[in-house]
Length: 122
Image (tube, rainbow, N blue to C red):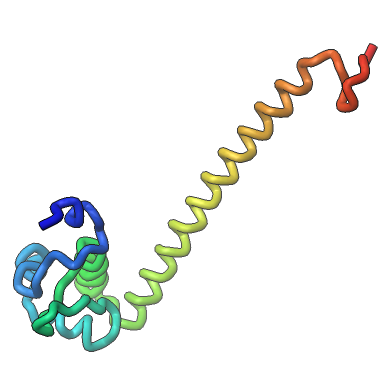
């Protein structure tokens, strides 16, 4: 067995029973998420559901939202908005890094006595 697969958060390493135990939920809860198309685990060669760590995180977040009183539709909407917010924050970070790089590049070019054409600015 290649143990490095376990480092992949999308590797389907957990059976329904293991997933339910880790999350502190009943197996029917996980099956209901699958039936609703919200968390769709992969299937083993024998047809058994296999969950990844990523899917366990998603199922856990859904459980939290349900515990707060949200229904499935609102929980899905919240998850989508949270994902979009994460993506926007990542994009802001990338843009800030690019801006910092461009600023450093501009400053280092500005410290030379030559202008943009290589001519002396004096």
